[in-house]
Length: 305
Image (cartoon, rainbow, N blue to C red; front, side, top):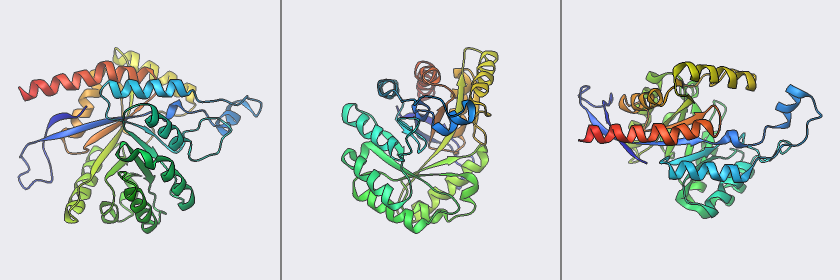
């Protein structure tokens, strides 16, 4: 569901000028994968049985997201179909299976290694514009190699996405990314930094006659009250044995708090859309579909009127 929101774009000549942004939203479903053997072993020793991801659960969540107004779902490279599986293309295979059986759009991370990435492209190619292969870019990445991979993805009719930490943006050539990326997923908890990166990427892409969409990431824990959300966040973090959303923007609160954050990111020009990172599934996904999406839609209609 594309949502029209009023914006104040910092890159405009008139800093006070306002416009309207067509904002989109995605949700990362990687938590539905199996927990890896390494994670099990660290917590419980080596005697745990193999865990399998539930495809029916994955499919039902993906369908619910699509029907509930979420524009796309995501799977990252950590997604595994079974806990003892080291295959790096599980996400691509599940995405291809979903797209062969259900409508929707999926962003799926594939490894940057040439041989593995080509296999991933082959798995996804038949689904064209409905799937966006995503490549992680780090300070050590060979950007020429990533550009060649992007050419292969584009030649198969698929949009090209990259994802990176905000710190990486300071160390690499954003111009190189703007020359081939259709979408850039930026990981940061700094709204101002996200806005600067988006502004630079858009300007660089425009100089090449291209356009690029920049997505932020937002971790979410949604409950009926702030107190309940904080209690659940503490519980989820305790179960995971690690802080939630470390180094990432996040909202722990009600549907109104999440909607406010979405409007803030889009309205200040920090992103063209947000990818929500649920703390738990399907609980936070249900709150997105039943609470956040309808609220944002209602607010947009009120503004338009």
